[in-house]
Image 1: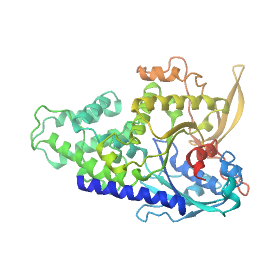
Image 2: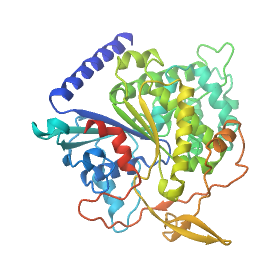
Image 3: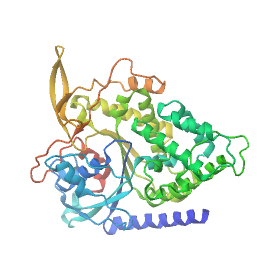
Image 4: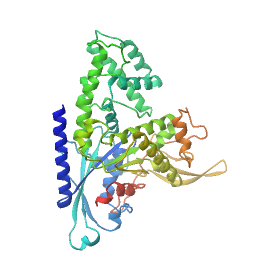
Length: 471
């Protein structure tokens, strides 16, 4: 294991040197990681970003575009032959068809290469022709990123935390009952272990559907080809003072360690450690609508994610990265089109406060981080509605459930983010002074002019932060 990890580290160092030489003399490559927590709109973000980089009329805040230096952009086969291609064309067709619908979520790692011909700026522009910059977009589930926290945690520690959470949630009742039945089992059988793992997985699915974000292991939700393997057939159990060597507790511990070795480490070795820039998409409005406890879970999840990008957190990651760091990380609150533009600054301030809190909690330093509120695809229009003699700034869109048009006034977000973060930290059950509503909107039919990508909110600013300095 140690020799293999050191060999991986040497390989990463050689790759880093090669990337640097390539960037100076050949065609630079930027690997952009895209992940998101549940229902954040990751597939829509990638699809709209690529479409708007290819047809750039709406990308006025991307400096290379505003300066007229982008000659063209086009798709090429991705360099990793063993990684599935992000199905851009199918997803774009879903959003731009006469009866548009949200595309299906991706359930594994996928990749897409977008190549851009760029005219150099400044004095170099008169002496050299356009150069090619490759943007390799790597799409992966956010649940897998949260698994990094398992690498430096023992089974007993993880079990205590997970069981405490499950006992406080209605979704965990059946699983806790299964755990009580499994206590101190010595002569266990494989069907018993499988039944306990299935009960735990059912709890995780229900918790995710209820909006909870602290879901580990992430592969239990997206098992893929590993479904049914021992590395994905375990569950937390209460610590035992002297667990029997061949008892169920020891077996669950062994499988937990196998999950870290055979699932988590290969993912970070093969994909995560090669990322240059990263965007993390967050459904902050959904968390606010869910109440203080969901906002606190979001805060902790952001801290865990930032910790994942910090070399030195554990010996495995330090050896693996060998000095290579993610340069920029953007936390983007999606679905800004669910708010009137007069509230966008407040949503951004809440994200910035969550990011600052997460940065302090993770003791994070190194990469440049930013928070932003965006809508990768704008599905609503703004209007003012009258209610009880008051004029309210609202948005109108097509409801996902019925297809009918409806106006939404979600409530005023507080100007001071502490009015949300303080109740979240102190464990309040609900917001005392306000209610925050949310609706699920379907995409609106699009009528795009030549050269226009899909309508968005601040997608160009997000692109400028993530890749603007490399164009």
